[in-house]
Length: 199
Image 1: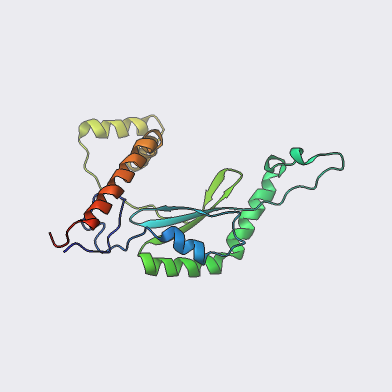
Image 2: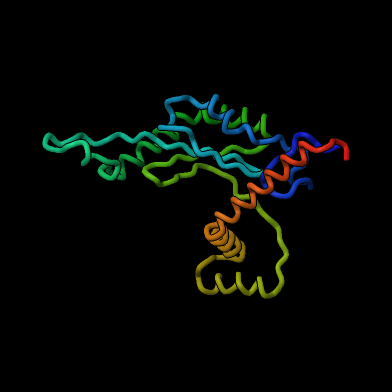
């Protein structure tokens, strides 16, 4: 019988990487009920994979004092000095640390994934401590030559850096296709869960 507590929508089903992982589909709902209302300006962006849950919330930024002759349309986050934004990030990070650690521990126990935090300030994302997971692979000479070219050109410091760079680049240019693929896999998982059990 198929295990009812496997991850969904994050790669092929089965295998040691997803064995016995709790279903993360209710992660956004859980965090919506658990996070304090005054931390972020709206619902946080939550990104999930087999290893980690990343929670990124938009910080409220103090607005500069309006000049007597300025109208409301002139005030924007672009007028906020960078130092003010950096101070807001530092204040949030330090003042919420104990609560974030407690919430992370609860989520890790519930979903068996690490939890990382970040904030978004005026469209810029700042991630706090998060995982860098090693991934082993075997490459033939043509693929190794690609990595070595990136290293020799100074684009990357090592083959590992070059591989990470190429994955980021591929993800950036194929994000729409990857999201369609994830959605298709979620539908397949849903159909499997609705089918006869024990086959």
